[in-house]
Length: 182
Image (cartoon, rainbow, N blue to C red; front, side, top):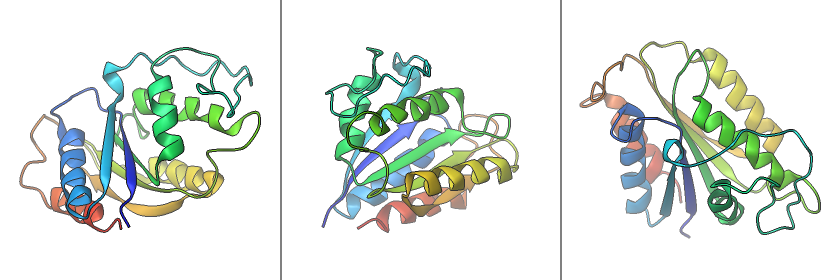
């Protein structure tokens, strides 16, 4: 049975190394009959969470803020898999993706918790270096909190400049991770 996959791309570069991982993953996922919807977060107007606890999952737009998260909420509610794609910035995910992840909390507030449980996730990361330990700890804790199945990750170190990832095995790993979703 085909899966609905949402990719939250937290890279500021549309044609960067993280986006190359997303492209390979998407090819694999679509070749297995899945549908993929990518959100390029850097091009979206998404404000930081206000910590107001005013969200309500029963509303069409569960957050009190009215911005481009309104496009992401229904896609995440309806999907089977959420893929976090991000460069590694200071041993963590980019600000673009962290902001969107924080704002997903509105789906847990109010009536029914529409975020916790019943989904799967994967992590795609590109980085100049290789220090992924801290971000993996965060990601594992997030998966535990959300009660989502962790489908795996592709961590591509040694990629500073746009295009450095070309020809590297991590692109094939992303393709195969996409293909494995069924």
